[in-house]
Image (spheres, rainbow, N blue to C red):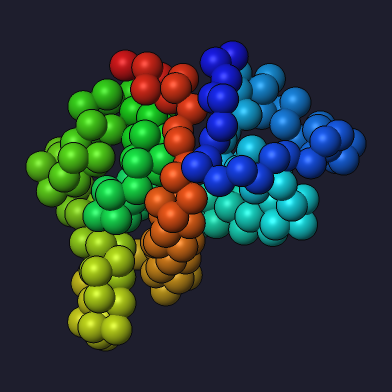
Length: 190
């Protein structure tokens, strides 16, 4: 495992020792991913904040949904690219590469999803997520109807909005605190 000396520009050391539940979660990350994502380390100065973050992330990104894991990661990357969030572009770009088996898709998503080879469903989903990122107050019924026309249910629309909203929040926090991506992500799934 490659370790980052400090996951953020802030001097907020992790709780030491970590509570047993948190240490177990970090150990699972190490076993499954080969690393503890720096975003988790960044929140580990306050275990309540870490638990709130991971609960929301796990619900939005991993819970049952009409959206696939890849689609949710694609939203994360499109939103993060629009916000120019270094951490999330790198980490979630790697996830798109890994889940799709297409390194070029992960690269296109980070650079400009509009040049990627996407289905009409994926393009509608990402156009909506980016509109929410740029100007959420301009969202109209026609935007939701375009998603329905692309095959999304109202529940799916809620999930698209939730993923986009979550990453708009986390992008801002990551940028504000200078969160650095784990170096391992750069070489993943290439």
